[in-house]
Image (cartoon, rainbow, N blue to C red; front, top):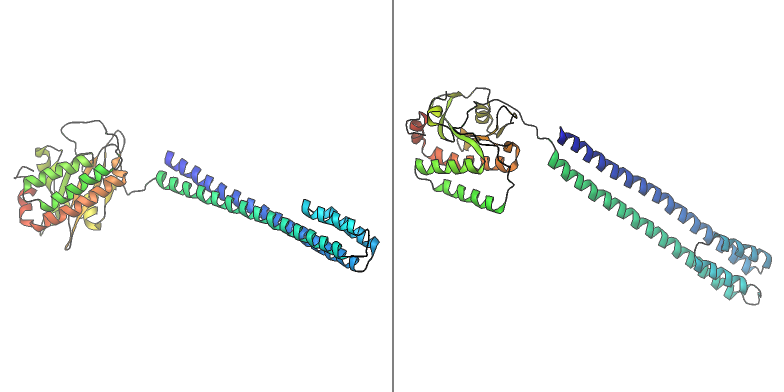
Length: 333
């Protein structure tokens, strides 16, 4: 529930950021349009003043210059208009007046361009900030998004000793090295004792209360435990065979060849991860791990289960004749 509420907050924050940026850009575009209108009006007024000067119309020239000074937005443009007004005291030479009018037009255009560039820069900054904020919110949404898994029941087993839930560890370089060593050792395993040791190490890495390797019995429609760790041997030997058609995570992993997740029920049972054992000839079994502390939802535990299952499938499938004694529990596994 908390994750769902946080997800809604992050989504609302991202939408608000984009809405704010959109409103800012819309307002800025209106400001740019106003700047262009003023620049155009000043240009038209300069042309009118130029015409009056060329016609030596002193009265209309003075009026035009007064209008120009009133609508000028930059100090440089106003200074040039003032210089043009001084030059109109004598119309014996109109060149200085026309030169100052051109300077005023250039100064006003430059001021308009500078203001528009500033507004465009502010727009870009607002959009970039909204995009960055939205990206952060998306990342946070991915982190807090509730994971939806199909919850199915598996045979519930308890270990010999109860231990409190362990703190869920984050993946690190050392963890990756241990996983790589485990996979290498699985590829080199030569007997059941070595394989049992590696099963125990896999269980420890996943912080599992217990782990069982279920194998498909050749010619049958059932799964039986071939290897285990964390559970009493007598209990494992008494586990009934699982039908491939059963409605539980182990059978579902075998039928669908996909990782299955069983979510923990606080105060009732731990969660579980079930990874199928896939070979070139199909799915030959599954690994089920009863994980402490809600670790079944972490990417690290799920990835580890899938990696170990892939390695172990090749090991177990390479010597199928060695599975049947272990399936009955006669070898002590």
